[in-house]
Amino acid sequence: MSTPPLTPSNAVPHAVLPALPVETDVNLKPYNTFGLPAVAKRLVRIREAADVRRVVDHPELGRAPKFVLGGGSNLVLTKDVDAVVLKVEIPGIRLLEERDDAWIVEAGAGVVWHDLVTWTLDHGYPGLENMALIPGTCGAAPVQNVGAYGIEVKDRLEAVEVMDLITGRPALLPADVCRFGYRDSVFKHSDFGGLAGKSVITHVRFRLPKPWQPVLGYLEIERKMAETGISAPTPRQIYDWIVAVRRAKLPDPAVIGNAGSFFKNPVVTAEQCKDIIGRDPGIVHYPMPDGSVKLAAGWMIDACGWKGKTVGGAAVYEKQALVLVNKADARGAEVVTLARAIQESVYGRFGIRLEPEPVVV
Ligand code: EPU
Picture 1 (cartoon, rainbow, N blue to C red):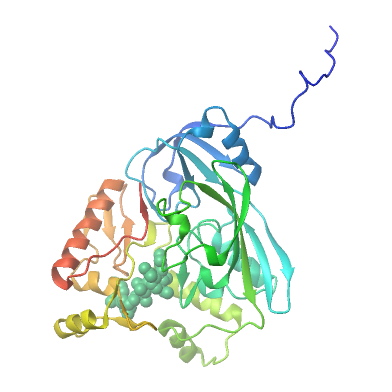
Picture 2: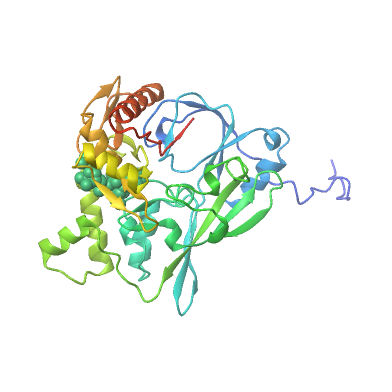
């Protein structure tokens, strides 16, 4: 049998890319750091930006609702996921540009955040050390503007590369259009022009300023400086300190499931704070530059006696009351019940409604 000639009508058009592997009934337990049980009806692994285009062009998946999953470190799964799960696994870290005032480093959205922090230090591009050991992936970091010990991702972000889930086209979003706030961004919302469910972050570009300057001033860093007698720490020393501090008080998701801080630290007016201090003089609070005051939610939860309390398999972490953990095969509903009980109790005592940090599905 002779091969038919390649004519325009039977030639493989360049738009027909290799078949997109669609996995069905995928157990999501290993893919969320809380270790909560849930099943994805359909899951596609995004290993390069072009995979998003393949999803958009797919006859069935193209128009179906999508759920973008990064490292699953900011997620509470309470049920199976009907939307098509796009599991972002784009690898790669590189120095994109060296300027007089900064190093620009680009990371694939699937790169583990802590691996990026370590890589930048190993290659001599400091600036992310205060954010060492935050769980999750680089693609998830801008979604909730992760931060720790005086630095947030927005302070080190140059731009975010996304693929549009309607058009399949790429776009480069400079930091100033990402509407970053405290644990918040344009990627976390679907209303008011938000991009949740409408685009997939494929790469993130970081701007690491030159000359490097340490960000000190946090109580725990100052304590390390006093203990060691080091008054001018190197980036590596700060990294080592942060790793030690986090290991001492935050649970390792690989050992005990959790999603980091479960609630945001509430911000109140100076008058509200004065009122609370009148009743609870010990409350930990931080005056903000705009005159408002941030309250330590962990302190309030602790003060209400929640440390170590459980609902089913979900528990309040013994060493840090702001962290809820999966103590024994917890279900998402148990985590949510525990969280609601904490909210009510804190509201009853302080008149403050705590807002959860993770996305509840
Ligand atoms: N505190 C208590 N009891 C507790 C927990 C905290 O009294 O059970 C007190 C602490 O002693 C401290 C204060 O509350 O005086 C604040 O606690 P901590 O320094 O541990 O920080 P946090 O406000 O609880 C925030 C971030 C963390 C970040 C740390 C360090 C939020 C929601 N959390 O926690 O981020 O690592 O500061 O910068 O802003 C995360 O977002 O997942 C996260 C871990």
